[in-house]
Image (cartoon, rainbow, N blue to C red; front, side):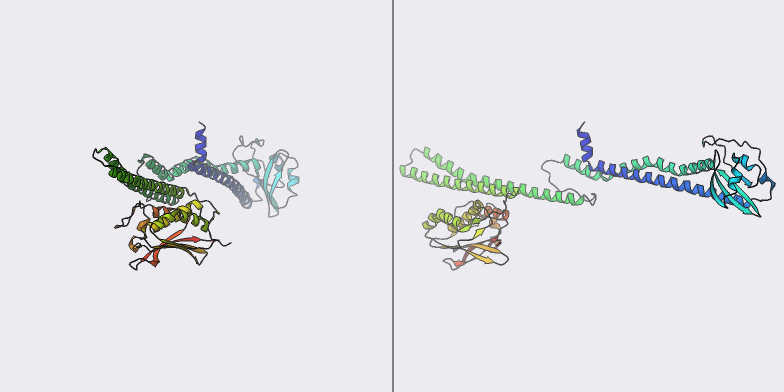
Length: 463
């Protein structure tokens, strides 16, 4: 039971209904009060006008203004038991005026008042009187205040009652209207609930209110990104399974050959070397798969710490020492032209992974006796580009965007590789907002064609 009040309080529909109901009720009450006061005041003014008109229509010489009507003069004051409203008209010198007003001093007090409207009080009653002088005679037209208030209240209430009766209808109409407004969101919620977990098709925004449309558009964009991520993961898993299946199958066949009875010692040693090489390739593939998965996880989780800088030259020394044996096997020349004091805005682990993949590719795809150069260039707008150039065979411009896709390998390449190196580099560069550029190298290969130059563009804060 406690969850229902909480759900009502957190519901935008219920909060809007509550606010509108309170606002409508408050405005209706203020309107009723103003309407009541206005109608009451206008009725009083109307009765004053009637008294004034009666006074002007009367003949001051008429004998009826000087005698009693012989009616019951002791009518009660209470509005509930009042008889029908009546008007008292007499001259100020009438002998019956004191009797009609129930006060022996009424005439004496009235004669002291000037012409016009007055609120006059006798011993037991309140009167609204109008005094007019005509043909040297002073005429008084009076009406009991209780009569007047009773008539004015009836008139004012006749204006207020329709508002009070229509208020519940207005509440009901407001509730129905708000519920109809939120029907689109409820239908959309029902549609999403009934959907299959694999259904990421965009939601229809045709009949959605304008205020909710940006939210639905953002949700559709999220669906699209999620669908693309799922397709990317499926493709990645498919390629990974294919890449792993090939060396494992080869290892299985090679191990199975040990059961052959006529296998010589030399052939056994050859198989063992092949098995070791296959295991090494499989280990390298698994390492790159793990690196790729870790880089994608960091990118999805936005795991980028602030104010992180890494000294480039110490890290590069350790990396060259690690890869130098591979370069020496191919008698390659590896040169570095970098300042000792350069610090880059990236973590040391990620910078190590990026540079190791680029340098390993440069060493792998550069022919024997080739040259690899690492240098920096200061750009405008506080940018620094780290270039790794080689004298290999380069990459055609049509394929430079494709090589960043996982498992993509250039046709005609006989080097062993998984096709994950540059994909890992691109993922980490995107994570750290580092621009990566592929261009023709200034170094030439044996065919006098430019090799490949990989540029990493960092934004350096000199402050």
